[in-house]
Image 1 (cartoon, chains in turn blue, orange):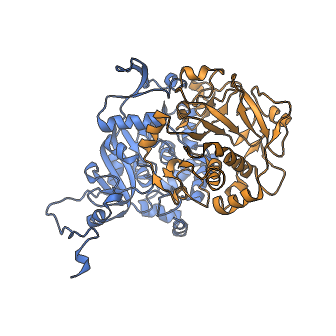
Image 2 (cartoon, helix red, strand yellow):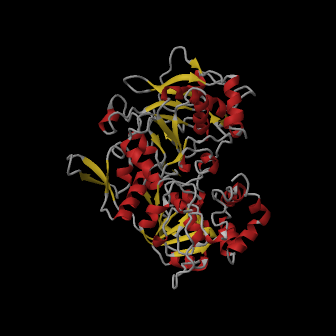
Image 3 (cartoon, rainbow over the protein chains, first blue to last red):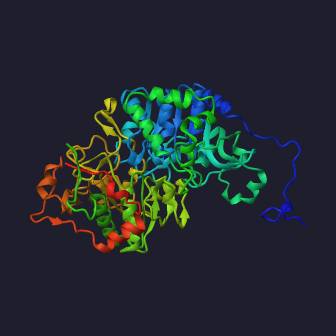
Length: 305
Length: 274
């Protein structure tokens, strides 16, 4: 008996299911979907999708990012796509401030919702689970957030009678996720990270997953314990190798710190428009983007991961 | 002007000294769960070192990597660096991290910081200036609000100057002892003890019993108490004979250089004093 007839689980692979549809779409189409959206839930590594949204001239977006986010948000702000931004943390940790975000916020060109981890995570949880709000105690009382964030409302706990702060549901039109592997039905594996994608996806009307690799569904079946997003939540699947570049993609490539430095330098010199032209607007597609970044450059990132 | 912090010796950098000093003080936390967040390169090194020296039973959460008890030997640059995940024993989804923050009790200790801190340990990550016209927009509060609920925490700063240590923070994103005395416990979780120690490139500070005013605990090599006072823009209680922060031992440095930070990231880590 040929071993290829049997999958790792011991079950015979399903041959074909007549009529089962692929959810694969082009990156350009994904960009157009984002451009038609108002509120997006954004995973930080979904950089190819972010670039596609910018190329599709997305405007007036409300962005609900991950609780710690960097270039995904900063590039959207730099390109003028963002009207309103929920923030917990936007920055590059030891590498510095997020330049476009900082400038746009200081110049009042974007509306800020002064949030934090609890607000974003539990507001997203509320939208994902259909809850009207989530009550929080002993977090905000001693801080200035209730004064700065009008969406934090005082409420009475009907059980203890004590005051709590209520966080509203944070629903999105589109959720953007980058995965290491995904099949054409949308079953996605996001390796490493802390699994913020599941509630963000559940809180959104449409979910688009880009992936380093599009894999056969039998491969999904063999690795089902690694699937972090079930395909029924996903509406569009995009093949996007190096789709997190210049950010890290666990087990695939390291962050491209030289490219990030070039981005910071462009801001410092007031030339972010040139950066956007060279690496986003001027690129026909992601292959063109990667050629501009350089084959040697990206190959060099595939070490120690 | 900000000057690079200098220990006055080639043996170890200021970041390496800070990591070793932080690691020693984690002995008191052995057996409990704690964690670090973003921008926590020095605390990551300290916790990893402590597990090899004074606190083998620590459980620790390594920031955005979601890793529990990683055993990296190359220091991660950020909390999302996959190196932060090397050898982890478990992965904690962000939803569960938030649950733990809400309850507070599971977090025995944590490392926090800010753009500004005042004499009662209140910190600000929101920005500098009035909110409607911020002079500097900060990166945001992240998980620093959990200081209102976690059992206790340590604060660390990359820069020690009068713009960081101020009489009054522009915004409170991370509540310390609020207005001093017992004011913290009018609004923070009972049982959440507040900031224990403050690590900077110039010194280690703590808070006076009762009043909870900021107090100089020990002065780092290369500086004296007068330097610290001059670089601190808020009131600072200074003991008559301030202690010196102990130098790292050869054994601690060897572990740090070979098993925690083989790439010597901390040797060139930019910190400033004054």
